[in-house]
Length: 186
Image (cartoon, rainbow, N blue to C red):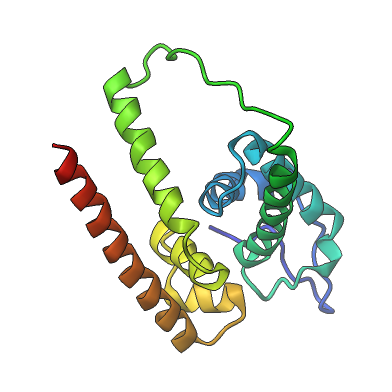
């Protein structure tokens, strides 16, 4: 995937093509926001705001670095802000349950299993420290290489491997506990 922000002679960045940037990275930003624990109702707004901020701050972008790293930083900050707002609003607002299935969607049993699996993954991700969560999400859920994760987060490669090892160890313990609960219920 080519970088929609290129360096022009003299070191200046070519004007950003917001449409191209969005088409190339919107799904990545949406998944990232979801994995980082953005409130479900805020996902689309976070994606929208990420690209508006990217456009507004296009002159701050270093075109020699991957654009995904830049978008990760913007998205991460927006998710943190949304989660803070959600905690403040939790006492006042109650979410409205989703109604029914869309035609062509999986059956009710499959949807329940998917939601339970996603809920368990989110439950696990929220048990991690921010440092471990960021590495786990980028590497194991978004399939970035360890060097890409190190570059995105601005940490040493060995730090990425250490955080990833700790997160995976916690994940193994988490899945063991969940499995034990399921066996007791059966």
